[in-house]
Image (cartoon, rainbow, N blue to C red; front, side, top):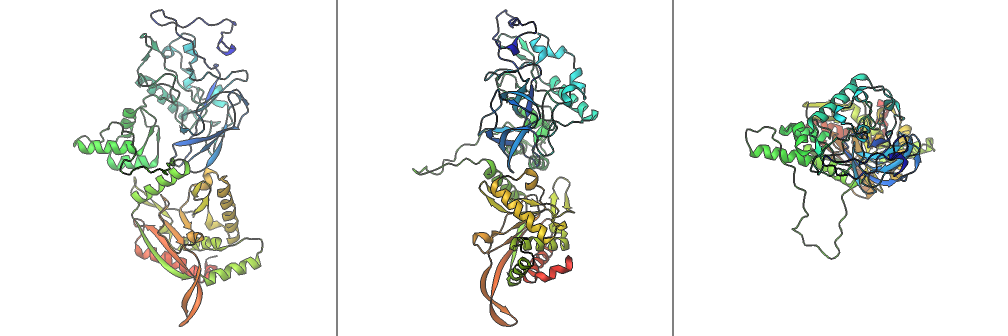
Length: 538
């Protein structure tokens, strides 16, 4: 037995015994000052991340804010730093596994701590001392300014972490939620009938969990889960991790999310859970918001016969995120598409003139198209909008955060130029260049991939003329530009060869009608044909 599991006198503790007197096996435990760092809230409705690579081994000594793992979210690949210092005793998950927000990521002990044995259960201090945790003092759970609340750097991901100055109000709310969970969950029993105390992961309201913004998870689910499974959770009394899409779907179908969370007994509710509950409610009239049983796991399609050369590629990471977002857009947005051909000869001439005047600016066609979009959005703000379904409101955004589609080794991503309306054309060109390089390198942060209000898609780089782009949900419109190619064109009643492109606009018909959409598209086409007209708005 290691030093960390011995008493302060240096003698091994008395073996634990069941109510029948049978000696119970003593699993490896963490030191009292061990801390569990949970996967922090990733924002934008993200509820999980896939472990790509561990940067540290169990037993390594780490420092505050040292990156410990690389995870891939639906938005980007991120190095996650741990806000605690000490010896890393446990890595909760292997490369390729998906970790839910709020679930344990690593356990960090004192510098002299040893790695925990695989599958070992962690006991609370009161449990190790033979005291029923239900009767133990709870001052630590209600003290917002305890020592543990002050530890850690407060910086885990962008805007997430332990936090250094939580108010008494938020601490008391966390304490009340913890008390409610303790009161609602029944006692567990060993095989001999002995009631076992419920271990919990400690949070920053006086307990020892690193993620302030992520929900605290317990290590048990009653008799239906193994006590050695660190990913099992208590049946919650309140909804813990729910994406905005799931909330909206539940609101539309009148599903009680709190009741549904209790019925499922896990901290993450998915779209399939809500849809199953809605179907159950429809099948039983009069039971509004009825909670259905968990939906069965999907099975493989059997309609097609497997061929010898068939390959199955897991729908994970960015590819899965793209699939979910595009499916959401098609399902929720009543879109319409309109297009027009435009003479881009003037646009190419303007690009050449600007490059001569500013050789180091790197101004290209994409930067000029971005400038044209910003100008048109100022004239037609109804396209720089989104729909709040729950409030039944159209939200017109004050800032123009221009997203643009970029191909990367990880798949299609949409970097965002925030406050594009405040940038000059040269500044726009520089921002587009930097974001494109970051997309190719996979180094963009979540903040650089979120918050867009309108998207520009230059699919002409793939050698195609036109497309009907899918709106980047929850935005209200997307402009697409095809390749620029020489074609016969009538100029001043004479046939000439001009550089022509096709411009397509897909828009949410809830935010505007065809007249506004047509006016916006015509403003884009006019900017392409006569870029000098943009000077009136500069």
